[in-house]
Amino acid sequence: MKPIPVCFLLVVSICLIVNTGVNRSAESADFLPVVSSNDSLLKYLWQDTAPIRCIAVGDFDVTSDGAEIVCGGESGNVTMLKGRRNTWTATTLLEVSGTIEFLDIGDLDILHEGNEIVVASLDDHLPLAGEGPGGPEYWGIRVLAGSGNNWNSTLVFKTENAFGKIWGLKVGDFNISNPGDEIIACWEFWFDIASVHVYSYDGVMWTDTIVYTGNMVIMDADIGEVNSSHPGTEIILLDEDGEYIQLVQNDTSWEPTCIWAPPEIYAGREVEIGDVDVHHPGDEIVVRTRFVPGIILLTETNTSWTPTWILNGSVLFTDVGIGDIFRNHAGKELIAIQDRNVTLIWNRGQRWYHQVIWRDLAPLSCLSVGDFDSYYPGDELVVAGHSRYVSRILYRLFPSSLDIV
Ligand SMILES: [Ca+2]
Ligand SMILES: [Ca+2]
Ligand SMILES: [Ca+2]
Ligand SMILES: [Ca+2]
Image 1 (spheres, protein in one colour):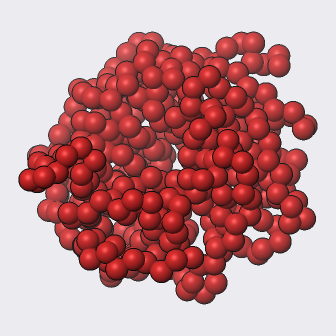
Image 2: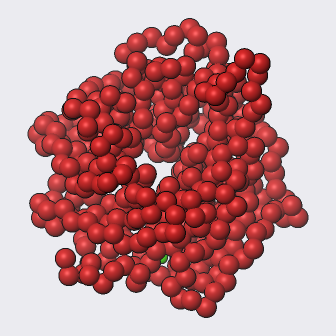
């Protein structure tokens, strides 16, 4: 652990509870064309005007049943998709003059009914004199709360005149002493200075807590019960060099421990934690690699950590997710995207299987799983990327060969 450099404190301005005034009344809500089709296996729910970078599924609008979809990307718009079977409506919830890079959903404000959406965007700017490529980037983290046609956006944090970049962002219970969920953001300030922040809202104000700093950039973070020798949840951080770091919360402080320091080929770009192996107690750590294309599983038994390389690829994977979408398999599966391909990954006994279940029209960027379509039982998978389409992949579209593996 390294103290936070003074330069970092000078260049970052913290803007807590700044309401940007985006409050859409019923009259001004920006409805986009409704998708309606007679095709019961409708694949493309909606098309954005520019490539889509991020997508999330969750129940953030209490006026409609079940979960909704939210997506964003190079258009600078955050769009909500609601629908059932062949009829879908798109509503713009927020517009920024830049790119939406991260979206996630959780209960950040316990006084607002239901869940809220977190949006992290890289905002456009005109270069200042002397600035070239690689100059300052202006990031904003906003929380969107609303229902129906009425949505509010609150700016939680922004960088100003700073070299800063968010590599990973999630919503979850990252601060057990604050009610509900919090935001974790893995920042790189200046060059190679890692600063992991947890943003907590207690119903009155936002608090920004630095939970980890270091000289190696942290690529991503997630939380779950991955370590049986420690009661409660653990946060896992991936550093750029390959170290896997466990953060455990002790009252109001977060204590880091390196749990695995593998060769660089195992260095991770993204971590997702969930119960993807019913034969192993608790949650497992799933990692998308950043140098050698692959998906890795890291599991703990009696304080020893075991890596399993469960999938190779020809090019780097761009997203990995966890969900229960394969009815012929008990428990949850992994879904990974690589170029135009969506691959389903599941285990039986000690063996891992994988199969491409969908090919999009252009390279994909993001995926999410949830019960966003009440017409079909259980959860559905949604993917998006350079085709600009949001595609729903139903179980009935899976290749029939899957069921005999
Ligand atoms: Ca709430
Ligand atoms: Ca909490
Ligand atoms: Ca398990
Ligand atoms: Ca469903």
